[in-house]
Length: 473
Ligand SMILES: [Zn+2]
Image 1 (spheres, protein in one colour):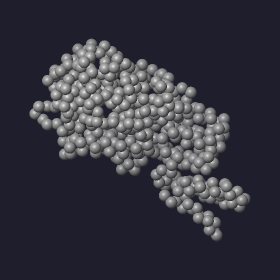
Image 2 (tube, rainbow, N blue to C red):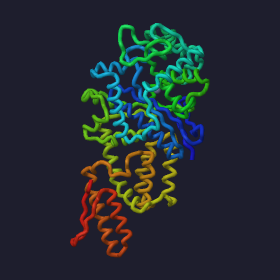
Image 3 (spheres, rainbow, N blue to C red):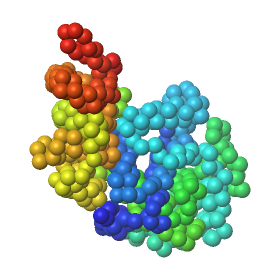
Image 4 (cartoon, rainbow, N blue to C red):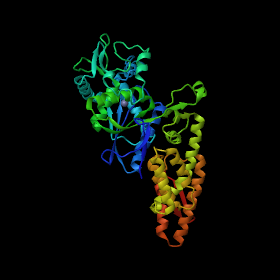
């Protein structure tokens, strides 16, 4: 079964197969580590995780590279303003390197708390200065650069296709631009290498053939992507806000340097919107995973919430909608946990016609440009389908969770109070079933139940009055 993905480059859904038929080379723009990650940024990483898991479900491996921007990202896209990292250092009173290390760690914690698959490579911009300088040199040799008093710039007029990717109306953009350009020749030109200001000692700066300074943000991604994945990627991802400037510039630099297509597919995740004034007025807070946890939510509630909307649609966030996602997720777990336990105990496989049909529909949904909301709906329906045995339904849950990543295979967090009663009732019934099996001398089944419960952290104690059980974790 094929998987189709919406390609921003062509504005259409296309069937995806990696260049080598097997392993997708994926590059995702990573965080600028000068602050905590907002939950809106994290939505993009959830989308990229769903992409990777959906590709795996359709039989493709991935070499997945995510960068850490720890230098060169200015507060303005117009090559002006402060370096966000140096600004972060001033704000916190720490060194730039300390700021980068601190917020990189924080980002990794958030990343893992959302059950996102570990990339094959994490790469830091400051570890790839030599590659960035080499790429700028190539562009210089090919006549795509010019020098001003504050840096080396990319001459966007030399790259004919510059406006194609973002469908830019360049004539208008150039004529109508009122932003201050400094010595730039065109508003769409951008810095490849910036010189350190003469009067200020930057904490991060390097020697280069052009003078001491630091790389531009866009060149970092091109240099790192090509170093780790080669000159043509299979898929390049990021947020929709990157289309007009950052990704347009990545394409201009990379394709001018190599003469090859930089990425076959481009995929962009849509924004998270904070629900109206209500939220910003009442809380005004910068929403992070930690701030959700402090309000009693699990990071998995946020993941589940994000799964409910297609990655190319806006997602409107409010605490009310997060709360209803939480309830829905817990209700789902309440239903899936006993099924999963039975599937594990029985070593169940998906083999009946009815179960295979569910699997096929699921594969179709995720293969249709990652229609995860539909896939999630299929999970909710499949676990209710009496035509499929409970063991096999449990096997479907485990299979679907390879894409959804909701940790449905684990007991995970402490069972919430509402779910706890029904779980206790379910354990009681398994204990009773085991007693009956022992009485019938079906010791294999009795042991199976004991082992399945042990896996869930439930310990049984046999005594003269019958069997009691307790939770060990
Ligand atoms: Zn990037």
